[in-house]
Length: 169
Image 1 (cartoon, rainbow, N blue to C red):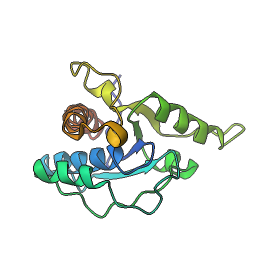
Image 2: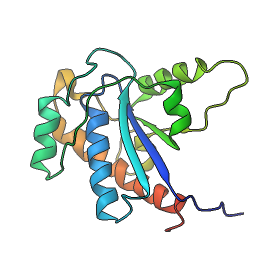
Image 3: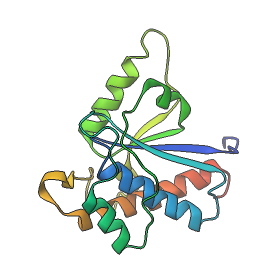
């Protein structure tokens, strides 16, 4: 049985420090959503599982790679993922297994009988042909171009899922 289409979908991208991968994914997904003409129906944000860079803008190399690809960075500032995020967003999209564990830990903070409403998923689950199950963290080793390609592939697959959620498939 088909589900009832949603009028609005909210997506939260999550990585460790919220300065490299998740802001890149937020910017790329925002760009794709705008190109698809559904930006009024989709809210996009990003957060991190660790407080290393709270209040910082995206990493300079993230900004540079986005610029090379013609994608606007936006007004992003690093913040932590919260229990409230897990209720406020339809999709919480993590970059790797460590982020998945971190988000599940935040979900446990809700405690007791409370069940968060977000679908907690890996970005690369939406890019099965990309040859990767995780988006690697470029903070220490670089490879922002490779990370961009993986993020772009995952975001394109996620866009298809979001369009289906909105009844546009």
